[in-house]
Length: 191
Image: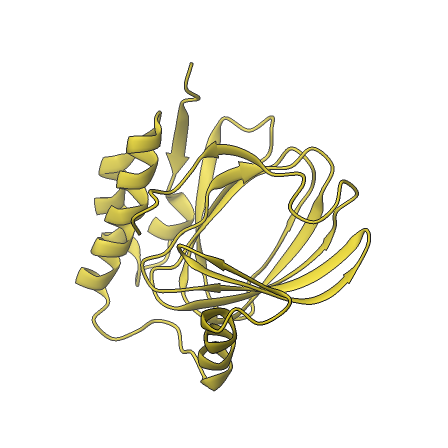
């Protein structure tokens, strides 16, 4: 049985700059399958390009340098379909890393049993979907430099790179790095 997730776009709609984008995105107001998850993420990126021909966020040479590290598959790097991860510290159970998300890329809708993670947006722009286990709907929020989020165990979340996006993650991961990933819906492999 697939999980049905209703999406709440109120935070986006409340900002005049994003109101029309958010209103159109509400057409895809629920996710109930892998297909609808991928459709939502792709449509969010498509609508973003339509409404924001001038980038909302800015990336610097830091994004480019980290992406080059990922492309060369250096040590402490994980290459993914959405970009990749550059690990800066791994002293179990603590893990610090950069999430380097290419425009149009998005991570799985996931949660963790024990992992506690804090995210800080450093560059670019995108969207985050998140909810606490007891909440009814998933909140959809804007990601911009300076935005910060904390996810306790059991909180569902997903990152969407509507533009190139650089996020720093600091986590306490008792099960071991990438051992506490519970995927609710995964991205298409052909991003």
